[in-house]
Length: 94
Image 1 (cartoon, rainbow, N blue to C red):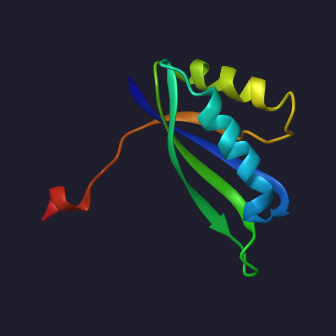
Image 2 (image 1 turned 120 degrees about the vertical axis):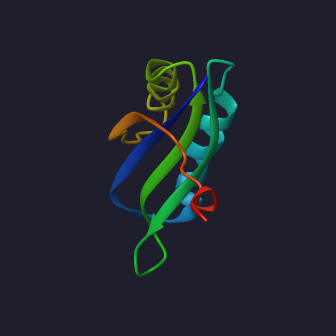
């Protein structure tokens, strides 16, 4: 399994409550080939969500794409892209 970052830029700011259904869908549709780990959420000055950065463990980006293809059938949700990533821990550079 590799680490991946899925980025979602919302067309207009949304409340946290408005994006919760997508989080629930990502969790519910996670598989052994693609599993949602968690997200960082960029907020605007009013506290609304403008962009979401999602960490995934997956076999490949296509496995994550399949999950979002299912989600967007019922919840319109943008996917800017899905990229392989690695995590760099600051403690490794002490």
